[in-house]
Image (cartoon, rainbow, N blue to C red; front, side):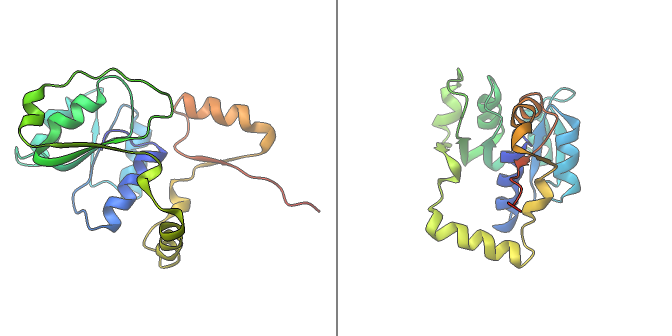
Length: 181
């Protein structure tokens, strides 16, 4: 998993609920890796500023590579890392890119070794079916939606919320509206 922000943490949460026993979080911010490990969503954290993430994933998987690789960072170079760290026969998922175009240069040999490259936007969910499932999982204590939330903002603080998100000062924030008196 490249990217341990709010989207990455949500993806890790889904992987754990679906039975993943080894989840490797890769990020450039130690605070985001710490959060993934603290919440038990990741079993391993890789600081991409200090370690080659592909080499680290290969080492943690005994040279095999990840069964599934997710790019939740969406910056130049991360998809290439995900593909290289995913095993032949594995699946690489590009998570929706709200910011638009990212240039990608892939070694086609990696894809020829039968990796599946696909994308998702909004988790590719069907809200009528999946939202009630998420609520049930939360009610059962199997997912902690509040755990990934670290900051609340008022509507007047919305510009600050966006700035904090852009500069990596928060993992996941929410803008709350006060109930009318």
